[in-house]
Length: 179
Image 1 (cartoon, rainbow, N blue to C red):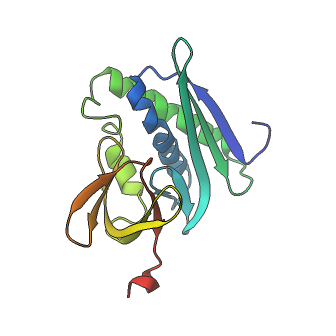
Image 2 (spheres, rainbow, N blue to C red):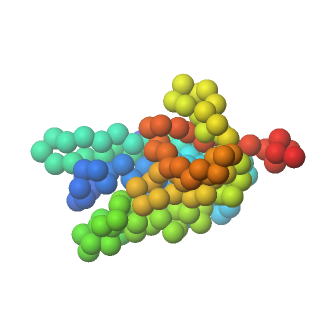
Image 3 (cartoon, helix red, strand yellow):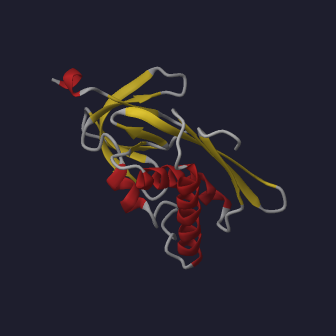
């Protein structure tokens, strides 16, 4: 991309089509690894000091082979875009190799779930789950993610439930609201 606020990558990952959905979260993880103190707001927003630093979007399709368009848009200009792009490409390459070696049989997040988990914002805290239209569905304790990239939460009535990004988004609650 021509400006200093975004990275656009067209990738042709050598993975099964259902696995492509992990690329946005994988890119968010790579951004976090390049920025000290950054965290991931599930599934693929990068936070720094509680504010959005970058938003990652993913579009994928098939034109004879799988392709994915990953876009990382930063809130401000960055001088380190080339290094971040290299980090994303390195993470994708390592992930493809792990998939090829059979280390992702459980799901597409399996090769990097531990690293992603370590960078998740809101773990162990009460968060709001929002419907796609932005309305609040419920408040729940964020427990983590599974190997398919779904968030795992415990609802107020004690149920453990998983949600995919197509079902809900997360909103962190300020600690003052929880007291």
